[in-house]
Length: 261
Length: 261
Image 1 (cartoon, rainbow over the protein chains, first blue to last red):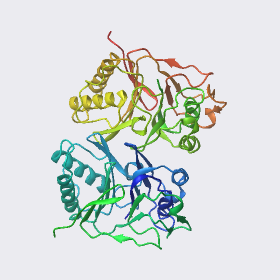
Image 2 (cartoon, rainbow over the protein chains, first blue to last red):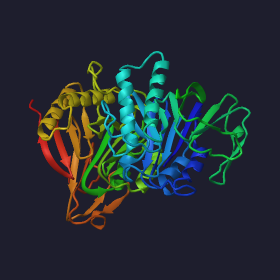
Image 3 (cartoon, each protein chain N blue to C red):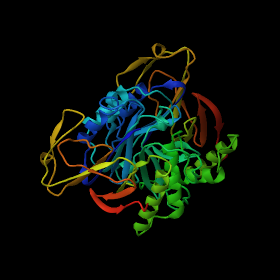
Image 4 (cartoon, each protein chain N blue to C red):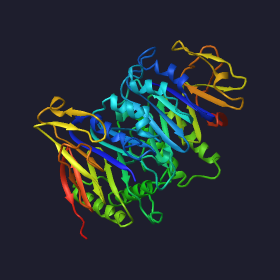
């Protein structure tokens, strides 16, 4: 299995604190030694850093901790390989362009019988179940919405339906973004926290690091962090339900879809 | 204008030496202060590093110099903005997936009347002439070859024709790769060098750095470097002709197409 980390914020925010705890799970406090990656959306642009080596030893991961990249949306993933060898092509997050936007995707879990999922516009580069599911999901969305819809609700409902189909194939915890919205879908395990004024202190669970967010924020900031397991031990995190899709924008929940089952 | 740097090699090779000279042109010995990027193909995978800040000051660029990433194909670009603001979405190289391969593209030059070039499968994320031309070119290739051709020659001929069309719109020096082949097309300025045994010493033109390749290579290594301007001053570089497309694989020229005009 793998671990996921996401962020949605209403001001460009760096993820150094959360990432510092998260990367320790990549071969340090956790067993996820098979690569890691992180993607940032900045001013309509997109960049990602991926490394097929353990995050805890990675000079690129250390750079990300030390070089604050400020972003509205971040998606990160550390990998413990199940389907697909340990190599760059199998390292999350994955990205594809749709409607002139870079879509970014990371998956935690494992699917069975994913090979028959039909592909259309998008084809996997690597050999993971995760990237195949991503290409299927994006092809389905693009077929249903050849151009970006004015009203988002039908898109979100379609996305929830596609996630439910994937959950029927196994464990499918998802982070997905087009740079404006962050979509988080829970199959088994995802927790979230929203930080807003009055800001307090937070202590990492995986490393000896405390931050006083009051010193790094302004009163209007809203920053939400979503992770497989809570990253701090002195704050209240909320666990998502199986089958739940949350749509985040600017740090806040815009919509929630629950399983019909 | 911008500058281009490419590499094709028959063994995984790091580009630290060439990149050390090249990045000095990004705000140091050259005026290209408006961002830079570099893409590496490794074991069928792909990763890129992009920064909208001058390469000479960039901590990410320093990391690339210090952390040897070994690759068969590299594409790098430093930018002096003409069309499109200085921001991440306008920073080369650009990438799109076709046939399950990540295609990487960087352009030096400026086009006029590029807006009418029709788009199909691919849509630009940023606002540059370069990315629009890339999306047009890839859409045209995908329309002509919905699946990867067994015989490469028709694909290469089509690519040369598309490059010629873009050259008719202005200056269009190109680096393009699917991870196996590196395509270099010259509109005004591109030079190349192939290093093979017996290896000698090379001295950078833009920084005080000398390397003795004999200490870092084996007798069978073949490594070619392609750049807007020669990067070393004690070796023989060859300048490409306007309208010339070279197809590189494993450090060697596989095919050459010349302008019919």
